[in-house]
Image 1 (tube, rainbow over the protein chains, first blue to last red):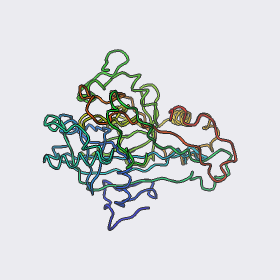
Image 2 (cartoon, helix red, strand yellow):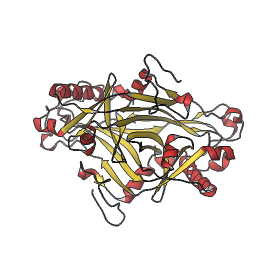
Image 3 (cartoon, helix red, strand yellow):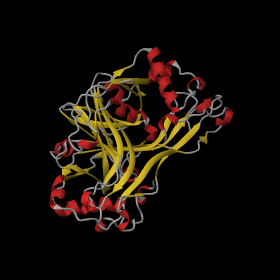
Image 4 (cartoon, rainbow over the protein chains, first blue to last red):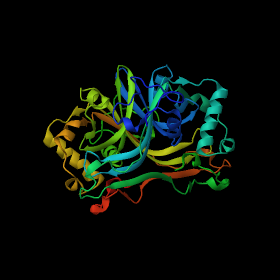
Length: 220
Length: 220
């Protein structure tokens, strides 16, 4: 699956996949598709040698990742200063039960992206990107919402990270048991997926109908 | 939800939750329950100021986290040297559609745990912990598997991390719209969960029946 050149991130010491090479890719389209398949990511950063990792919601435009949080949070403040971040987006697709412990695995799609975020300070850009995020989650909902106040705007830190480099890894196969396929134990894949359920309406929430297309972008 | 004392991790500069305090807990039992609710975690570490984050499978015994990988992988080699790791376990439970962008949120359960892993070198301990992992994934399966070879044992690095401190965050509520509940837009929660599907049997995999209890420990 490995691929470089046009439409691919260049592999370097940071993003080069060293183990499980046949699962690795530097293809940008594949990375973007995985990034777009979920709104949950994990953002890692370090402060004085101490690693941190925080789950949050992300979205993408072109080669840039976006996420937001309290403007006073340690993560936003630290990353707004130009410190490096590494962002993982992971989709778990199945448990792969092989005939040996060693070949037991999971099916998954994952991307790890590297960059140095910056704070989006321009109000127009801020609003544009927040609206795009809502357009992914619930198309048509943004203009229905009670508009953001100046206090809320100030309390929200929006980060933008140009993806300097990234790598994707995908496993989507049956057990890799090679010539041991006749070993007498059940083998196969237990598929795992996320799904959305029927919405729970909030108190007084039926004042207006629910928009269509909720979470459709993620194919949950 | 904040709680300290017996049965709780002490809060310090590293694990203290600074934002969303009412969602935070240092209770060990809650943290362990969340850790045990999934086998997917994200491990963060840093090398020369560069943060890394890698999705992998984990399990727990008492106050220790375990995960494994190729003994030659950068993560295993780096962390076997006593460098700090931070591990996040995150369960996404729903999208919370509030009446404003600001109050829009997600329901989730998450733990971030801090420590310094060490390599499990003793063969007896290695086998014991690997068997426990399999007992979580698929009870009764370990003794059915083709036994691990010496080459496979050497190729597998098993890390053990005493949890020095941790914090949990949980949101499991309807939209927090306060006195804006009459704003005329649908509001509520779209529940999200993981589920397992019927297994896909591998070629020749029906040589033996599938064990019962697959992934039951995780309540997918």
